[in-house]
Image 1: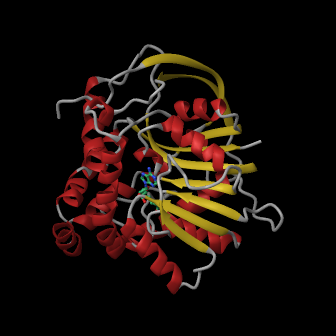
Image 2: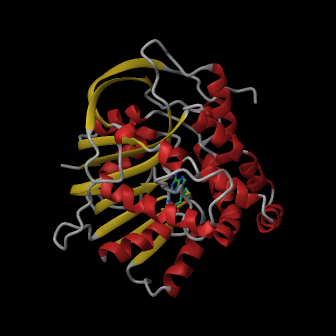
Length: 347
Ligand code: SAH
């Protein structure tokens, strides 16, 4: 890898932002907030490895489309309908824990994220219309439809995911309540002020332009609606730093390449953007320690007989993704990758 992921950074101090203290986060609904001064990499265009290689947005989207077209089948065969991290309340010894334990942890992630964002559950307050941005094969969309009785619409770049999401949804008799289409999160086919809940579970890391991403989320959220982003970020910079360390950039660059993650930013960049677009009640949390058992479990499943044969059938893009799994573990272990939640309300 010759090109660095991070081409342009400069620093700014963002004053007095309320950040949920991850260390004291319990899966209770009362996570305390602390006030910190954050220092962050900041760039008008977002820090981008693909931009540095002059990759056009259409080429990136095509890469993401092909990645999910080819890898979603094998993922579903092994893991099922949810394509995101699990939430674990306690440690799971390496390569231990049944698949169902990890699948339960994926459901728990959805529940814990909703609870953390304080999405109302009562009849009058709960979301009636939801958009699932980067919906995969619709696991969250159907879950939210079932939980809230809401109408849910999911978008993804992958036609194969839309097809599969639609099939599962029809089989579960949700056809009229939950729908899917191929569409770009940075150019959403929705009117302004449309949804009570804007849900983005692990798609933000694919967005080449975080500013455009947040602006679209804010645009389609209804007045009083809530936005919830669960995504992979890089760590905050220390007050003495102006960028990540060279070895950190190199690690992210390799992950960028395997998973089509064109622009990494920190949680505070999201907060800054949410403020810029006039969102209120902005809150963030670092849940890295609650997801630690996930990637070792994914590696374990990939080196099973089913995993290996599926990998070879799915082709090079998927194999490359599998090879990068150890890099994710490394990124979390060294505190470089942060599993981040951001929520905000549109006034
Ligand atoms: N949220 C799902 C899937 C996460 S995988 C789940 O939790 O199961 C990431 C998803 O983001 C894929 O469906 C991918 O197609 C989608 N995605 C990535 N970039 C996108 C973009 N620009 N517009 C729409 N969807 C995008």
